[in-house]
Image (cartoon, rainbow, N blue to C red; front, side, top):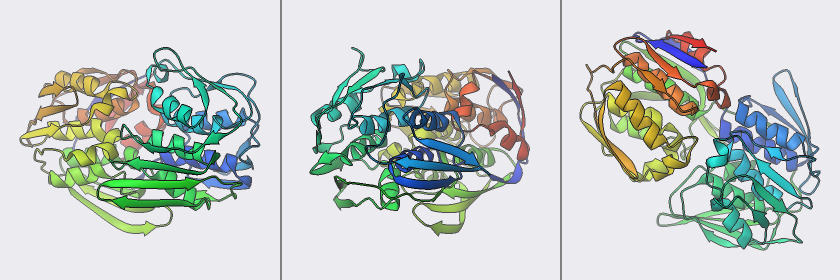
Length: 439
């Protein structure tokens, strides 16, 4: 699949974006481990989240859809059934890492596999601490998929300081902690997404959070059962970020994005853009188990910044969009402490550098960051053919950046956009973008 995009102006509209991907994964997981029926609305029907559903269906969980709502008949913490074939997580790093924490405690063997992209991503970051908890796990000699998990008599709790800023590693250990003897304690020196902590509380799971200076401490005791819960999932901030970017960089534009999650651990992109001079308003704020708001964005003149390294971990998925914003800002933008970008669906530091080069942007790539020379408010990208390397966020960020190109731009290998934003092209057209999809 490829996208062809022509430059544009005057983007207008009131839109919604698909449900939050991170919350969708966790809702299915906890509903499947609960005892009874849960209802989930607003679920993201992207390829990654559908892979999570299929994994739990392959372990005997009845999950059905009716009138846009998913019904999950939970089997309990120990009620999952051993799969008859390897569990295929396709492209979903979140799902494979979080589910490993659950599978490590089951009374059956399991093999976890994925597509070629997922099979290149590092898994020792979860298998090592799970082994410290007594889990019997093994991976390839390169520390990647497939992962093989054998049953053990029990898991033991650990006190673990996260060596990398990763919500996936933290969440994996919290899920394993539901089954472990004693108190599981995790130290987080750099704040990451707290969707797991919030979702545990929503399902009535006791979890304790505290802080000492910059370090967050999370404590969790073993539980015997989980009660079912009805969940309404808000719009995904990472998906909204592409339309925030579109309105900012396109002349005479104003876009309102309804009911978007504004979890404080997810909106580093918003803080960074405001620091750059972005005109962004949050309206109609609400706060249930996840805070939400309508986001109003208008065309803005951006200036280059040195990105606060404390923001990097909670805007890691928005970095491709941020690089586009920086490329069209006035002055120089510097990013450091972003080495984790190299372990995503693609090496996003390298691939986004290639995108910027194709667009005619001057930059200096480093091992853990990049320095970008912005083109300024009157600057235009060079129209180009962009290789997204089958990375959905690279594909979408490049498509939005094409609004400021001097002609038609083609973005190649866009099929994986379906993993997080199946109707991306339709929403682009809804606000007035000239974009076509070719398969």
